[in-house]
Image 1 (cartoon, one colour):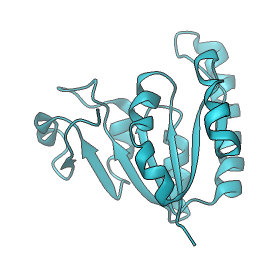
Image 2 (spheres, helix red, strand yellow; image 1 turned 135 degrees about the horizontal axis):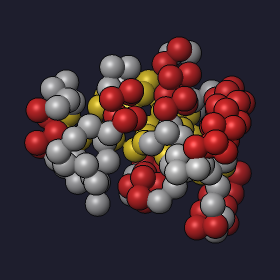
Image 3 (tube, helix red, strand yellow; image 1 turned 120 degrees about the vertical axis):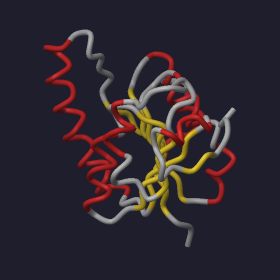
Length: 157
């Protein structure tokens, strides 16, 4: 039986980075979670019932974001117990934070890949996940100064 691995990220560049890992999908009983937006709907045709959506939210609309984030957290709990992943792989951001925390509580392995977009500073999700990650990967060698226990993995692209 293949190991259950959950790949999770926000939409946009983070999802693009995560999907660069698609050659790994065949090796595992994989599932993908991302935010639902117009750009991601077509992914359902490719990944079918292995793809799940969380609500899309942006912090630029803080009032509605608070409610959407609460809903996201509730759906995260639902998806975690539906999938029961042994490993959670993420490229970030806020969408992945609650899943990683929940996964850590229930002993899933957490693999975090810090975004290629940041070369000189920590991301908010990176700061949150770094202390709990079983494997924390950076894509720029300079980032090892900020995350000394991280592993340099090179560019995901």
